[in-house]
Length: 338
View 1: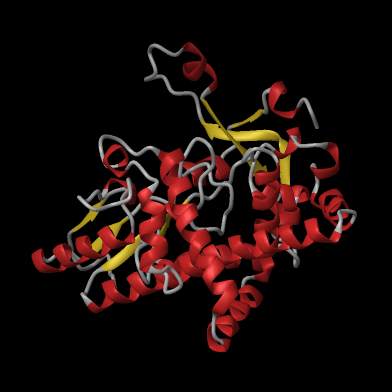
View 2 (view 1 turned 135 degrees about the horizontal axis):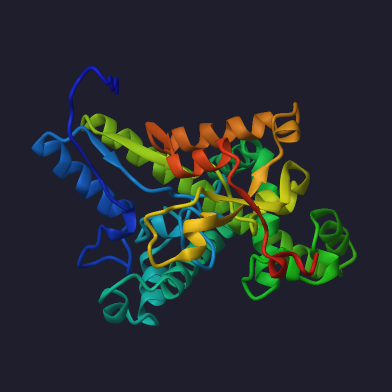
């Protein structure tokens, strides 16, 4: 769509998780976004803006992403044949063990919802690995090749998280896993059956991202057909405990974190009035982040985001924190084990 500041239009801004329906899996997802798109088109809205869709960590904050590239799996619409490897029998079997009434009541129960959707995707991946046709397999391999700049490091990071009770705090992992180089050596020294299991698990996380990119491209195309633009929000920084920092620590100033300037309006918070907010996101080292090695990855961040949503905004607060000198040393307990 051709959105121009000279043409007045109306739209709606909301977080995807809030689009709840009677038959959802405990959270708003792309199925609900499709319904919202129909409603927006019918009443004349031209834009739907969403919060970041990056994969979140233990705090479930879209502005504290564990990957600048990976899409949050809870955004996916999962049901029989969605993805196409998820059968009705597998879908019903997984849901039979879930307390859907509780999941659908009240606020989002992120831990349970993530577990449920991951189980459904594991069923789909098992079917894909066991009986996908040549064309489908070729599509997956092509995706992995096209996204190789970030995908394999991310998938390895996710496996290492599982090896450490789903913790993304890489500086508290065993010493042999605290850097990507040491972790790869650790993997090579494992027995072959363990290596094979870990490689399969990495393929699972790649598969999830493949499905995520397919579904978001599909909803973007559908919205365009209805005359509605999807606008995203890019969190310019990433979490200290992210795949990006783990794989490329030299691109970040890890002893400093970004935030906001002093806020005089925080009458009940003397610290924030004097020192400002500390968000915990590491500062980019622009001398290396914009090098010939890293620049394509930053552009890939924008490319992947634009593939899923037509327009993008860069979170103003995050951009401000990178543009201004409101940086603070990281709290000692966050780096004590480094």
